[in-house]
Length: 241
Length: 244
Image (cartoon, rainbow over all chains, first blue to last red; front, top):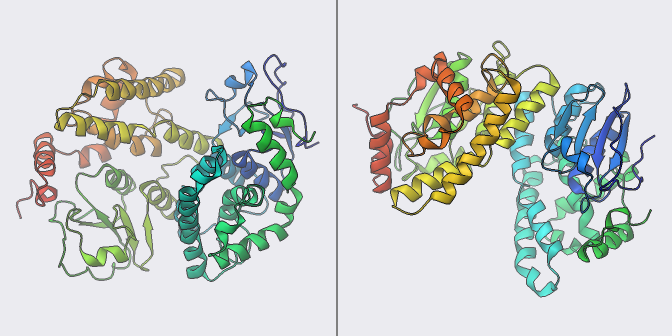
């Protein structure tokens, strides 16, 4: 049912039909960290869903009717309603579906998680910059900046004295930031967390989370994707299938 | 809301005491658009709030205990809880005071308002850059063109929806979150950027009729007085127009 490992749809492909009742559809890409956020929330909340992967270097024309910017992730429900922007999709799922609430109910606690989440905002851009650099010498400045950003997160965990960013159990903020930490090993950047022991403990705890481990992407698969992506190969998105 | 028309607190000022039970306190600055968002929400929801204005060029030392980088707006409640980032504050206020909800209840409509906010996200940067360029008599036709494009995107939404406001036929959170920059178009010298977006102009006219927007409308000459002093680097800029 969850076609997380389905081949991506590209230019010239037929548009998918309407979303069946009782399901929600996510337009995704197997290696996209932003889409991973939404996949984590779908899994954590046990939401029945179907996945359509998009070839981001050769996008189907119809995909721009789902998101004019042509970006993943996009949610589409059986009423044809479309939701874009990963953090917005995650909040929508938390509000629209019953079961375990990932954002806290208490308004102040929720505001605190959102304020802490702001501290993460430079990490995606930094990791992407490191990822797109071909000669590794250039990266020392970027790696240093990344370490600084990790220190900010370390401070949060130190103040809170809890394992996770939201408290003693996994919650929304942990899932929102996790996908980039999953990348660290594949990008050989694990050492950037060397000076942040609490963050390392958090990572270890996250690997133990049933949702995270169920959606775990193999390091070799990431590296295979990176290699093909750097060569601008259209096959990158389906690496390993 | 009390205290908006009060002098700023600067370096050397004593910290204010505890926030009394049943009220909120907003650390603010009269001309800041981000603070303006939160003041609009406080006004629209009828929340009892004391405003403490901060001199942004000479910040009181204690203000860094309210915000790590001394930024405004910051909301403080009677339990000494601090919330910052204008959108986070607005959402918090809507959650804590559920009567007169500004965000819709429906999850999809809530998501739509947040997506609209994303669509708007380049406007604060572009309007500020235009203001600075014009004040320093620099070329800014590219910036204005970019700003016009952003307004076209918003125009498209309103045309497609055929509603008076961004959230429907009644004013709601998204309108208040966008408003402060539209109120400033004139004093920033970019009012002509809405010349080709008639529906957006109609929205602006409708917003000016809203009681909360009206109550907080900043006088044009006061704003220009502030901007003149601000660009002369005067520490008195933030108190311009106050008599006591």
